[in-house]
Structures are given as C-alpha cells and as structure tokens.
Image 1 (cartoon, one colour):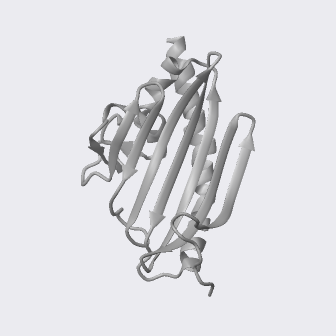
Image 2 (cartoon, rainbow, N blue to C red):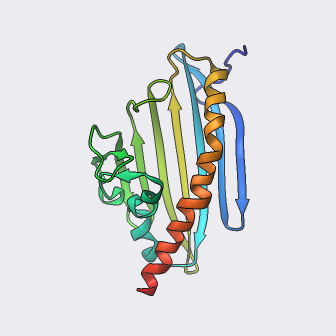
Length: 196
C-alpha cells in the first residue's frame, strides 16, 4: 500500500484518459491528497468543443442542462443558467425531489456559469464535494464550450488504491457519456434552434 503524498495545492495526480477527436476534447485525471489527516480522492474532467454559431445562439442550450443531458438520465430541478445565487438538484428522473446538492455562484450570460457542490452525495464512498465551471467563448462567429468539473471524495473505510481503482472503472462510461451523448446532443440542439 502506498502512502498518500499529495497536498491540497499539490495533489498526487493519476492520468485517466485523454480523448481528442477533431474539435472535441475530453480529458480526465484522478488525484489524491491528505488534508487535516483526512484522505481526499477525486477526479477532474475537462471538456472542450466548438460550435459553429455565435455565443448568443449557443447560450440557451448551455444554460439549460436538461436540454442536452436528459436523454442520458440527468435531470435538473431548474435551468442552471437562470439560478445565480440559488440552488438546484440533479436526479435521475424529471423534476427531481430531495435536497439540493448544488449552488450556482455566478452567471455571466453568454460567458460563464460557476457552480459549487458543497455537500454530501447519496451513495459513493463518503462525503463528496465539487466545483464546476461552464464557459463559452466566441471568436469569429464560432463558440468554444469549455467545461471544467472537479469532484472530491473523503473515503470513510477504503484505501487510496481502492478508491482510485473504483474511479478508474467509471471513467470509460463517463467518457462515452460526453463523447456519444452530451456533445452530439448539444450541437444538434444549437443547429436545430437556428433552423426553426
């Protein structure tokens, strides 16, 4: 068994996957560190792709995750980009009930959504929190969507190796979710909006 050597500002990194296909990039890394004697293990994921439309045409889709994630079973209790200063819930059924897990810290229309995930998550290996940023940058009438997601788990009865192994097992499906479902649906919706 290895000893966790990472710190909050300098975590121990583990490469997970990097998938680049044209303008679509999905990259995931795993990490660990010890804070106040507590093991923390987590994931970071960056997603980037370009849509051949202006930010004003892409924003309505970016701000409403229900539009492009519901097909996969991700349902939000509100339109995230309209909830600055408020909270929302993510569930596996429409109109999810229960405690809200996310807080929308900041929204700059047609530019950025910043979300904090400050509490426990049902299931998993222990308390989890996260931080997520959804960015939209327009250049020359084309818009690049960049999404950075971070999740941190505090395992209660598992070792670093066990949690890293568990997270590694989930990575191919997370990669598929973005590559085969979320990104294609997102682009389809943007292009359909213009056609209608």
